[in-house]
Amino acid sequence: MAATPSTRLEPAARQALLATAATAIESGLARSIASPPDTRHLPPPLGDPRASFVTITIDRALRGCCGTLEPARPLLLDVWHNAQASAFHDPRFPPLTLAEWRLAEVEVSVLTPCERVVVASEQELLLGLVPGRDGLVLAWRGMRATFLPKVWEQVAGAQDFVRRLKAKAGWPAEFWSSEIEVWRYETEIVGPARPTAPEVAPAA
Image 1 (cartoon, rainbow, N blue to C red):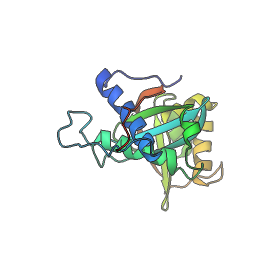
Image 2 (image 1 turned 180 degrees about the vertical axis):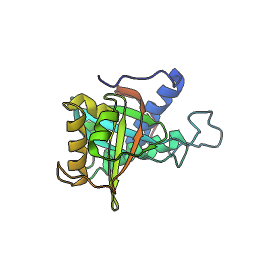
Image 3 (image 1 turned 45 degrees about the vertical axis):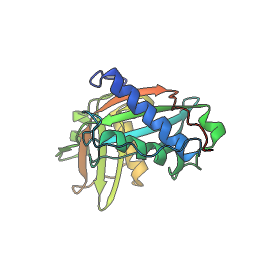
Image 4 (image 1 turned 120 degrees about the horizontal axis):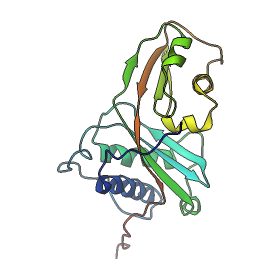
């Protein structure tokens, strides 16, 4: 089952998230003089502490994805910083160029709070996962890795999902430990879209 967009965010909030992501990226490309959003008077949910990820793709291929798992700042500000991180600081890619940005699409994933899952074995974890819905965090001895629910679209089932996540963390496919900590979350997807940022006139 593929992840599907939710309708919990109002259309205006969804548009604000995409526009903020675009403005943040264009600011990093020096095409805008915009600053991070003023969060003092933002309405909920944009002003509420929420965690998010921003994903950039070009021709459906990943070009950057960074985010947060803990709700430490207002959602709109979180999206701003994660958009810049995805475009310019994802260690898997060089910084996004202006030529690439003209071809890119952006997707924002707004996370529910992470829920701790206590399992006695990997098999118990596999049986409890809901494909297409569950995002997953695995942590062990200071190392942590996560997959957004959208990754379910690229895997062959729960076992493949978990094994790839372990590989992302740098662990062998068969690795399991009683010390592994597990968290689960869901996301609301905004996009993917080719968002537009307001044009800013150059300084005189």
